[in-house]
Amino acid sequence: MKKKLPRWSALAALGLIALALLIGLGIFLGTQDTEVEQLMEILAAGDPADAVWAFEKLKVVDCRDLDQFLPYLPSTRPTPLEHMVAMFDEPPFMGGASEPVEPFDLSRVAQFILSIRLTGGIAVDGDDPGPHLVSRWRKEIESSKNVQCRKLGFLEYWFGRHVFLQPRIVPPSRDTALARPAKDFDVEGLLEILRSGRIPEVMWALEVLELAPDDRLDLLLPQLGATEKIAVRFIGASGGRLEFYPDGRSLGGVLRFILWTRLGLEDPTVWTEDSPSPQALDALRAAWIAHRRRAG
Image (cartoon, rainbow, N blue to C red; front, side, top):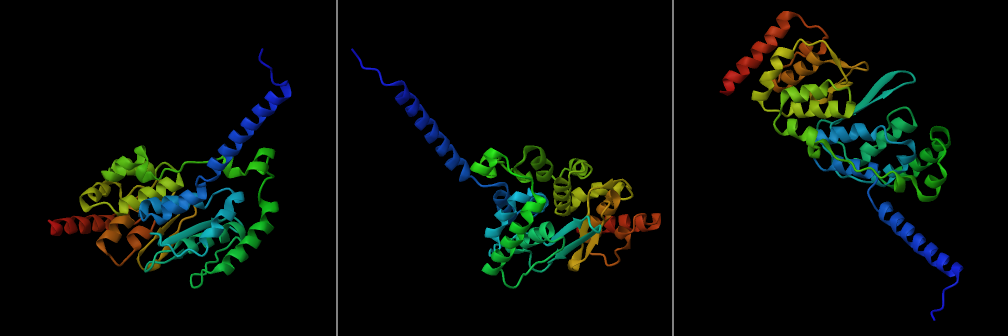
């Protein structure tokens, strides 16, 4: 006759198995890249359009994840970013940094985001991304957490927020819905994204259009006078010039900027003005058509 194990022994065994599974799951999830880590890797991957999309996402990560920027403060890994811009609420204004010669590295990206989130200003030390930055910003994060962040729930407190909320970040270049219009430079599809109001995708579509071949940009000509507002908050022109639009920019103004940049024109009036004269629009169209004819 078989001897049965005491009931408490069976329960204890089941408890140990459940604990082992929980620990294993926690270790597995805990070793996955967090949202910040994935977005920073997309930034450093080198795709200019994906980079501007990731940067817009990074500006609005949860305040409890700001400490995940600390390991990047000493990093000199380059990114394609040439402009970094933020909007501030009190008082309402926009500010930014531009680096047309040498794009920003991960250290300066991390500093920019930490400064706009924690200080209400912009503080970027590009000359010495050393360990002192980690100490400085760790203190800023610790002093702000009690003020800015909600209290953690019980499970979040014990197991860490990143274990339970483990996002998988797919950049637009690998997103089925977005990759097709980018690959084919589908102007109609990209204009639809520009009108969507989703700032990361809007800035991504703008970057893709700026990289489009001339024959695709021909399709912008009928829209150069469009006055509808889109969620483009800034335009970075040549030479590091930044134009800010807190309430958004007209679709036509953005498209005129793209053609103006491609033509290498000097007078920016045709795209900086909200409502340029019909003569100015005709002159831009004529300059583009002449450019295309010269190119054969």
